[in-house]
Image (cartoon, rainbow, N blue to C red; front, side):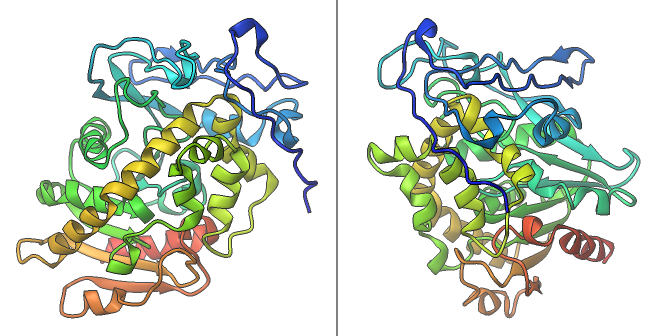
Length: 376
């Protein structure tokens, strides 16, 4: 068993010269090639006064699992910023925030990891809330022999841009739908299949409604699809609480470890935990984004689920659709899922040993199931 983490220490926003630093410097991230073959460097000096220190990751020396994962990917530019592009300021003291909370330019950077030949059919793997593309690390190699598989980090997650809310992106569900369209146009201009897990499924279905001619197959993994799923579990809802939500969303253990392990049987290895914690350890940007996304989910999730149900049950819906369900999901009950699919053309496949984040619990198993579905 990994040794317990040291208690995280929250730093109030202080002038740059007074920021507290970890006892040992965090490892410098490797570079990721951009589409134009230029190099985008992720600066390790991006603390903005809201980051945590302490814990095993802060003590790490040399390349980490996070560095290795980052080295496998590239940055893709997609979706233009709105507004006047002014520098983001923290919501408490009005100080200009670090580069991690700033937009990287006029168009956002999305972190993408790709496996398989570009001549193969494309499959887009979309992570849930809150998670990262890293959750598909065991699915990508399974699909790579037959498919060009792409996993990406949503804006606000992982290594993708995390602009401060109100400074180019507000993390609403409507904005995510529009942003997804921009990203897909950039990475998969031709036909593709989409796999989406968890609470981002209604956003993907809304996109798919207007682009059925582009889709070969849509696979939903533990999506919120019944009326009982319209309310976020307390593990996630706490990030939108008044005042405490801002604090909770800055805690890497609560925002990553607990959010993943409380949703199913997944037992997180320490080396994997370092990847999920990394964004919260180096900058407050991930926490501010998490707080904003949770608020948006609390406000609009019910309406999006109702819309998704209507779309999937519509006579005009012609896309091949499969629902995969990890039966050990502690957040979303399976009750009502089969009832909804009865009479529709959608297949339902069960994963008895998987929880909400099925790609984490049973990555290789899910990968093989996806291959069988996509061949059908």
